[in-house]
Length: 147
Ligand SMILES: [Zn+2]
Image (cartoon, rainbow, N blue to C red; front, side, top):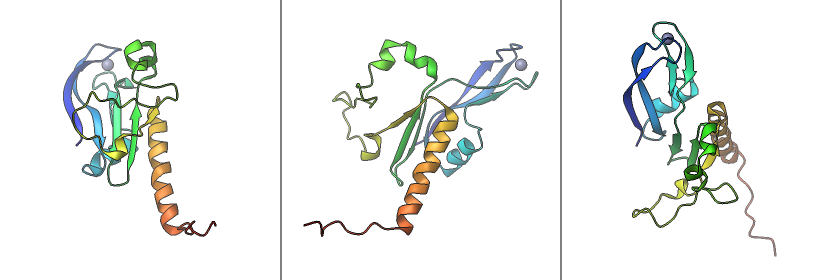
């Protein structure tokens, strides 16, 4: 499912308080509206009602689409400064899914594409969706005849 909640945020420029919806996860299969918002740059985007200062709210965002088997995770680049963050990955930059979770991790979440830029998150999702379309239109020939 998609996870979002309202949070009170102080404008970094003028300190005006306002409530913004903060997303930590988007399930595009169940919530196509969340996908649209991401594509429109509206996810975790802060705009001050008073001084109109705009910025990205720097929190991690998991994008997943179980139907299309896409999973990508945005992290603010500052995350790399923390050992707890780095500890979640192996040397190849892959999430280490360990036995810590006591539920079956869905296949599409076993290989999560990590990005540090929201625009790249959107580009990657478009790339994967275009691949699906491409391969539907150009089915590869069966490779059973190799011998
Ligand atoms: Zn402001």
